[in-house]
Length: 239
Ligand code: OAD
Image 1 (cartoon, helix red, strand yellow):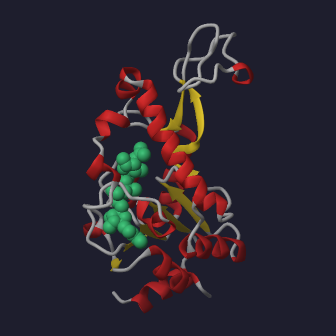
Image 2 (cartoon, rainbow, N blue to C red; image 1 turned 60 degrees about the vertical axis):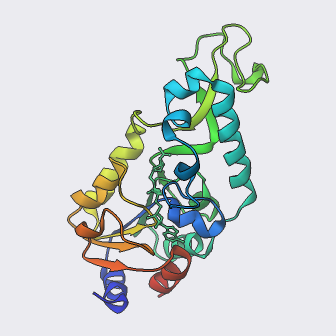
C-alpha cells in the first residue's frame, strides 16, 4: 500500500484513532525508551526506576529521575507532527481521537482536544498511599519526594509504572474509540507494551503503522509507512 492509498483512507475515514508512542515526541527532543543508542532503557533498567518497588526502595533516586525528565519535557515544544494532528482535529471536530502512551503532555500542549493519556502525565504527581485526612497538597513537606508532614505519605509521579493498571476511564474510552474507528494510525511506538498495543490488534478498522523502522505491530497493519512523525503526519493529514 502506498502513501497515496493511506491518504485516501484518511479522507474517507469517519472516525480515526491516532495511537502514539515515544517516537511521536522524538523530533521534539524527547528520548524514546527502546531505541538502541538513545533510548532511555538503553541506559537505565526499567525495574530500577519505573516500578513501585523501585520507588519504595529508593524514593529520592526515582523522584530525581522523574524530576529530571519533567524539566526536560517542560523545555521542549510540540513538533510538526503534534501540530498537524491538532490542526486536523480543529478542522474536523470529533473525527480523530488521540490515544497516547506518552506522559510528556505534548499532544495537549499542541492543543489536541480530549487526549486519552493511557500512561499518565509526568507533570503531575499523586499520593503513594491512599491519602488520610492529614494528607493535604497545600501543606507538603518540600523533600525529595515531597511528603505529608504528619504521616509521612509520599508524593509520587502520576505515571503508570510497570505492573500497574492503566487509568480505567482512559483505557475504556480508548477501547471504545478503537472499536468504533475505521482507521487507526499507529505512530512512533514499538508496539511491545500492552494493553496499549492491543488496541491496534483489536480494532476492526484499517491499521497504518508510521515508523522509521519495523515494529511489533507491522504484522497487524494494512499499510506501513516508513518515516518520521514530523514528516509523515503533516503530509498525511493536510486536506
Ligand atoms: P519505544 O521506545 O518502545 O518505541 C519508540 C518507537 O518510536 C520505536 O519504534 C522507534 O523506531 C520509533 N521512532 C523513533 N523516532 C521516531 C520518529 N521521529 N518518528 C516516528 N517514530 C519514531 O516507546 P513506546 O512504544 O512509546 O511506558 O513505549 C511504550 C511504553 O514503554 C512507554 O509508554 C513507557 C515505556 O516503558 C510507561 O511509561 C508506562
